[in-house]
Length: 411
Image (cartoon, rainbow, N blue to C red; front, side, top):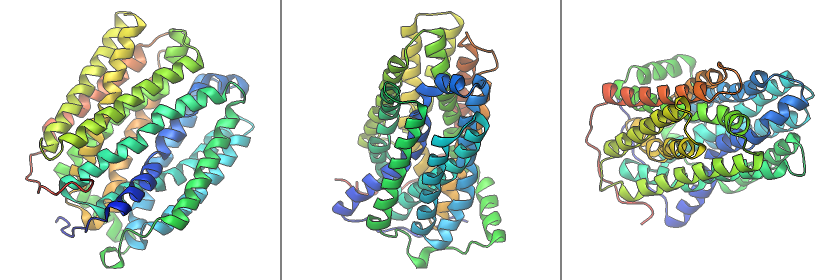
């Protein structure tokens, strides 16, 4: 059974407010992950921990994002979006403070877990709120517009993190994240209206929630779009967790140069997202999604070829740019197509969509360190493997569907 309730699009002024607020909430993941990436080698030395132990701070954050979304998504379907979001933002601030003062690596891993539960609220509720407000191609266009705001996060985060390391330690990075979380908490508390009316809420009884998750899990089309997005995200997470060690340790980049490279790849996400927004309505969303998955697979294979053949750094960087840019095409289309038929359970559907992204990403993260330091091959093989699996999932599980053409909400 699918959900049929369709929202009424907000006014232009309200749209701009939602873009800024929901974009900020969507940026929690990239900011919380990317900003401290240039500091990973420094953290390992400062905390007297192995590189693999420090990388667990990333794995803990990803797993926490998955668990938090599973809980908070259905809760927001029952209680509305604002209440769970405010609780999550408080958790994020507390977790960020604990990260800044952690005396050893294992306590930092635990603190990242707390921080991630709060970040999960922002991510899952932002995506569900878009489904509350839009439908059809208008929803895809809004997701593409969000890429302009949230896509700035992977561009600015490593640049900010790299510059912070010029005058403070990695702890200063988490202080900045604390300030960001507190500022967004204040904005949500005073400026975000409730997007989910009482008439469209669903009870959060455990049996009902499990039944909803079961219905979504056996929905072949939903699973196909979710897996395609999640597997490509795993490829992205392999790049995120391994690139700081590979580009700095193997190719000799400084933390600041690495930050610039990471930021340039983020530009690719924004550009691809904006191109997608212009094409939606003229080109079917499935076609745009397939194009993104093909681009990701091509980039992943070229990354592996670059590593195996020991090609110059430029070849690796171009390949990574293709891979990362594909996210700007895949994310808005996969999210819109996956949520299209689940308006009344948008929180649960958004949660399962996010869980697949971050759980598979959490599996991919430790794989990049299996070969030890001094080689880019494990990272490259993980990137290529998951990018190809994403394409296979789309081709084998999803089927074309007729989508209504909805006017562009931003035109």
